[in-house]
Amino acid sequence: MTRNMSQTITEDQVVTAAKDLNKDEFTRAELAESLSVERPDIKEGFRAARQAGKLEKVRNDDGTGVFKLSNS
Image 1 (tube, helix red, strand yellow):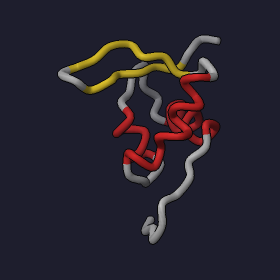
Image 2 (cartoon, rainbow, N blue to C red):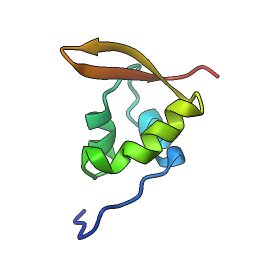
Image 3 (tube, rainbow, N blue to C red):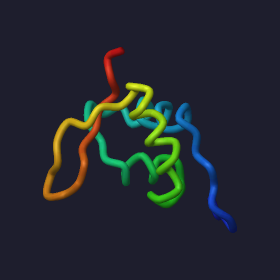
């Protein structure tokens, strides 16, 4: 998918992408790749999903955040 302008990714798109990865844990980069966008393009949607309690940070692996879907 080719983009000319930044794309706004929503909280729901981030959560759906996380579910579609079929992984217990994932990084922001994996979510961005799944959505065919650059990592900065998911910032707003990712932040909204975390604030809504839909994503939880599990740990840092060498400075890379690792996240999971919340059980709530």
